[in-house]
Image 1 (tube, rainbow, N blue to C red):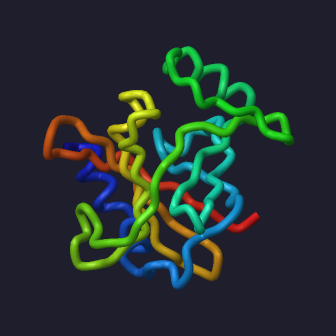
Image 2 (cartoon, rainbow, N blue to C red):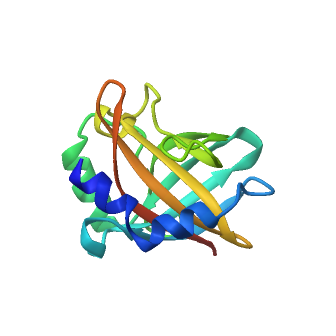
Length: 159
């Protein structure tokens, strides 16, 4: 609850509330920046969207993929890409009211799908557009049924 409280009081929360629902669904690769764990670097490169299928996936560095294969050893959808990185953890997209910010509509990235491991299925990302082809996202993690902790933010910018 403390993390959720601190995230809610951050400057990025004000930026998130000032954002808008994307005028059109993101499509293709977006470079990512994570604002989690005290802004420590994470081996995540961004997300790729397939707007026509309302789906997408994350892209990780080789180091990140190695770590994630240890944390989720039974996940079968790790996919090396042409750049030598790894695509993994697919999500479905939709729009609707924010989980915590119910007064605004957000673009949702829902990982609760049978092909994802449990540690990933408990994540719900929400994004708003803060500039053309630039998004600010919020990461929620289900702690127990009906309660999500908000653990940080991420940024995406069209590559």
